[in-house]
Image (cartoon, rainbow, N blue to C red):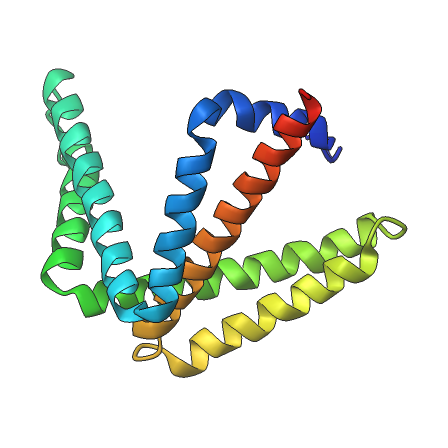
Length: 185
C-alpha cells in the first residue's frame, strides 16, 4: 500500500484530465446545490435518498441481467439483485427510513474516519499530527451528533452534511481550476 501523499501537481493534473473544460460549471453547480441544501436540508436529504435508491435499483437490474445472461440457477445467485432492488424500492417507498439508514451510514463513516485519523496521527508524527487528531475529534463529535439525534435528526443532518460537502467540493474544484490556469500562464 502506498502511504505517500500525492503532490499538488499530480492531483491538479488528474482533476484537469477528468473534468477538462467543465470544471467551472461543475464547481458552480456543486456550490449552488450545496447552498440550497443548507437552506433546505430536508429536501437535500430526500434527494440524497432518491439518488442512492436509484443507484441501488440500477445496480439491482444490472445484476439481474448479469445473472440471467450467466444462466444462474441457484437461489444464492439471485439474492444480490433481489436485495439491491428491494433496498432501493424501500428507500423510495419509505424515504424517512432511507434517510435514517443514510444517517446510520454517516455514523459508521465518521467513527471509521476518526479511527483512521487517530491511527494516522501516530504514523505521521512529524507531518501534521495535530491535524489528524483534530480531524479525529471532529469526526467523533459528528458521529455523536448523528447518534444522539437519530433517526429524526438524520432528516436535517444528512442534508446539511451533504450540502457542506458539495460546497467544499465545488470550492476545491475552483481552486484546482485556478491552479491549473495559473500553471499554464
